[in-house]
Length: 181
Image (cartoon, rainbow, N blue to C red; front, side, top):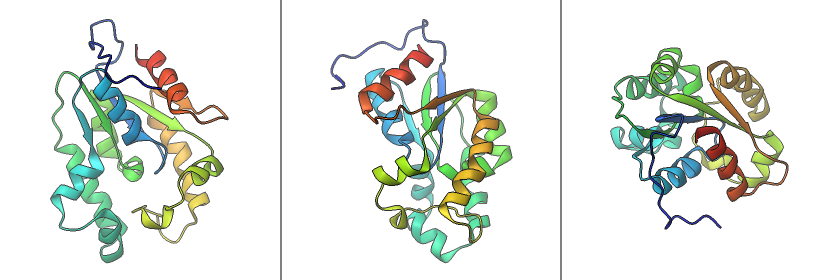
């Protein structure tokens, strides 16, 4: 069990002041980012939430009515407009990895942590992929998109955290903390 009541100071002993999570939809970027932000009393920003605050509909519906290219342009613009406090945890949308300018901006200001798991494990945990707004990069399958993005996540990340075979929030949180402390 994660004890969010035992607050820790985000002290100077931590290696990384600004952390940005990247990875596939459903990997846990927002969940782990939020848990860490609460535990260490840090600001947390979810770029998907920020995007949805700027458009009158959900990302899923936006992708149904607009082009993927227009969504990626919006996603990139939102990230390029970010200013970074001294300490922050950011969770990005999975498709941000296609936006070189935005990724460069994040790379210049944050430690990028790639949360990685097999597609089979992600699908087992996330049953509602059809309900999520996912940039499929044309008419590709989820497997094609997953394989395509693996290379990009590897390219941009400073740290890769591969989930253990048995998924457990406390164990993954512990792995992340070992990397950032």
